[in-house]
Structure formats: structure tokens, C-alpha cells
Amino acid sequence: MLLERFPFLVPDVRDLIEILIVAFVFYRLLLFLAGTRAFQILLGLLLLVLVYFAAVIFRLDMITTLLGLIFTYGAFAAVVVFQPELRQALARLGRARAIRFLANTDQHAVADEVADAVSRLARNGTGAIIAVEGEVSLNDYLEAGTEMQANASADLLATIFTPYSPLHDGAVIVRGNQIVAAGCVLPLTQFPVTDKSLGTRHRAALGLSEESDAIVVVVSEETSKISIAVRGMLRRGVTADQVREALAGRSRPALALSETSSKASPA
Image (cartoon, rainbow, N blue to C red; front, side):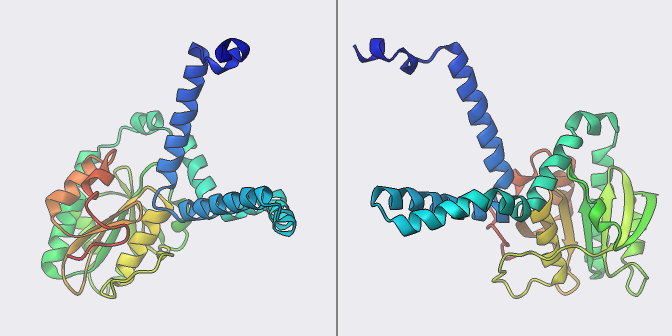
């Protein structure tokens, strides 16, 4: 029989365990890359691999040679291209959930304060952008702003975004239960945005959510509507209660935004 001639085709318990581990790693990798620029680059590389194998099958020597050279030096290029994602992944490893648990931060209290602040700001028609840090550090964006060490409170957040105050025109970064910086400049989204009504704050919220796992809350100065950006997705016209739920249950914030499009949903 075929199986007797090739016994390695019959998996044992160790093989099944290895298959499950590899499948889980690939699943987490795809989950990490989903919605990012790296995922689209990965699809492009997959297409090149398919073209390479097709060229080999049909004996297209020139294409095979060129793609072979690309793949030879592609590893060095990948380090440069995927640098933000690699840095993000290493940051996640360095800031495990266990460490965050030992930090003893009260997410529910912070969620209440941020929700209360954006509710006040929306009623007053005051623009604001608040980034609540997740597992990925936002230290790179602190340098462009003014570093602070203050308890996150609705009163302080509302004061920071008061029109014509020195720090009102940038983003506030919240880490744990502390406001660590204000007046920060965030990266704008690299994806094309078809909705022309989105201003700089919304584009910055999308940009940061593409580069990190932060939850970014935006209050529009023009419409007084509240928006939430998570992993490159923007939900517009949310309520203060929805902001509170997203921040308090940040282990599953993407579920709350699952009905939105990949870039922005109109209010």
C-alpha cells in the first residue's frame, strides 16, 4: 500500500501539534497585518512568487533570472519596507499583557473620563483628538508635543482643547491612567481617503491606528460629532457611551467597529 511505502505521510501526535502551532502563528501574523500597508505589500510579494513559478513552468528564462535576483536581495529590502511593522511587533513582545496587568491601571476609570470629556467637547463644538495607548508604545510621538505627567481627567482634557490654548491644536496621548503628552503631531493615513469631509484630525487618527493598536477618539470641530479610529478603521457619529465601551473593553474594540468600512464610514 501507498501508506506502507511512505510512512511519513501518516501524521502522528507530534506532527498534529506542530501543525496546530504553525497554523496559530500564521493566524496571529495575518491578524496582526490585516488592515495595514504591510498586508498589501505581502499580497504583492505573493503575486511575484506566483509569477516566478509560472515563469519556471513555462521556461521563461529572463523573467526567472530577474525575479531570482529580486528574491535574493529581497530580504534586505523587506527589513526596510516592514520596519514599522517589525518595530510594532517587537514592542508588543516587550509589553506583554502580564506586564500591563501588573501596572494596575484602571481602564474603566479612564474610559469614563475620556467619554465625559469628548461629550463636553462635542456639546461645545470644540475639536479634539485623544489617543489611548495600547500594547504598542507611542513614545515616538511624544517628542513632537509637550510631555506631561497628570492623571487623566475629563476636566483636564476639556481644558487642554480649549480654543486658543497652547496645546489645543495637537493630540493628547493617554497611557494607562496618565496623560503623558499633549500637542502631539500624529502621522496622517497613507491610504487614499475618498471622503473629502474628513479633516486633518480624522486623517491623523486613521494614520496612528494604522501604525499602532491605539484607540483614537476624535471630536469634529465642524460637525461636533465623535469618531473612533481602531486599526485603520474609522467609525463616525458614535456616542459617548460607545466611546466608553470601546475603551473599557479594549481587548475586543475591533468587534465594535466591525460594521464600518476599511477606511471610514459616513455618519
